[in-house]
Image (cartoon, rainbow, N blue to C red):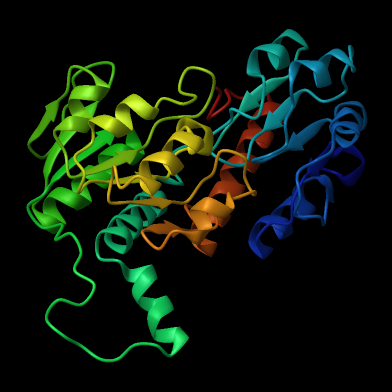
Length: 322
């Protein structure tokens, strides 16, 4: 494609070198250098000044943003990430703007982080590392920092899509865990798994509950006080989905009361704000949204988003419409 024919593309955050190099070679691209989400004014400007935009988490393309730009130049939001609850897809389509995402590329890396959090919170690894770093560790003894042994325990997976399945597969074949799950329909799995009839039933029957559902209005506060109360007192909650899926205030209350044993979180309801109460609790493992944070995965996500852009401009079917 000649330079004069290249369409204008805005990439809203810095990307890996491989993705940035391809974008510069194939598009008239502007790569925003800030790592923070777009402001409402920046989003409005992006719809008017670019043919394509590659937004990501936190770039809140709401109905109000589309309403402020009634005839947008932009015709595609090629979201960088599988989750797109920050984009009002219905409002986008009404404005003539297609929306795509990057499923598949994120599956294994996100599942790996779920297992990381499961182990860290069950075995008190974060607490233990802080103890060593503080210089207060006085040496090994038989009852020091006893945690939950994961092998053979019961794992509940809320949402058995690609990521949930990858988590369950790792847990079953790696740790011999018994798998139960909540989903809208029965799933075919390559391991024994039982579908729970409801979330309360699932929570009451497991030692570890992992949340792996999409974000959005339908799943906001899906994990609420009633679900947390149903968990056994020795159980742990892990969230690698979206922060707003868990009622953070209810989780804090449950942890402070000893209602559950611990939690491992990679996402937060008001990200990047993390409540001081969570940060103060030793039984909570907190990660800075590392779910897909490997160069290979972030590059694969970027290339997938660019593939969606190329398909749109060439009139080919969009690989990943939402």
